[in-house]
Length: 328
Ligand code: PMP
Image (cartoon, rainbow, N blue to C red):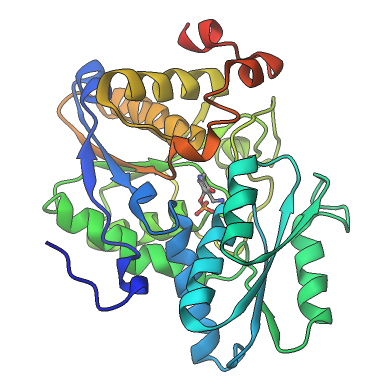
């Protein structure tokens, strides 16, 4: 049994689960890192804690200070609970098309929530630029800057990667996940490569993101669209710089949703769409590496965060992702 001396010690050290259906379908072992089991319910608790501890250590975050961040939601939830545990305030800026559950959670944690319309990164109204401006205008505030602050990926180099290595007894052939900030793929990739450079690191990219083409042919060129929250990047963030990507896959929402539904129906795992896309990517990697290999991926957050969207047939139909289509 795990005993924690304080709530922040509950972040990380998540379980690893063997995914039966995806393993049987590919003849490989496909393992999911249960990041939804973090206290804030997602992989982003790790980056939130590391960024806050780093800002305390370098003196930029002082007692009574405010943490400001732009986020698809999960980093905001992680930062708000870390801030509560350490006595800071939080202001979270989020695009208004993200799930209502994430917005309600951020408000419930006592953070100030600022909603902005979705905009391209080049637009000054983009949630990242808005959060930077608010941090500059607020007394005793820091901007967490998860996209370009490499404290984010360090949480995965020293946390996620080391945990997966230990949990798999050093017998791991491949790792894959999608990128939002890129902290998880770059950090876990760097950490695993440091243990064994033969481990294949694969980027799983959703539609609407430019990284697949970047790693394929050097050009940041998005194709298609995706409703997946928290992933889909069109620039090389500081966290992605030097990421050891050996191979890449592009996975559609329909493919990711089919996996989400299968894991729910057959294994009782209720996950968000980025997890489904990651597992579909792990299956693509399994097919590329061949039978008998051991592959790990990230189960980023829980489906309970998306009851009003992914698990709502009317919403799915409104996005052209009716259940029958997803299952096909
Ligand atoms: N899935 C979800 C649901 C997320 O919120 C995020 C974080 N934006 C990711 C995946 C991607 O993680 P990272 O930022 O480390 O690339």
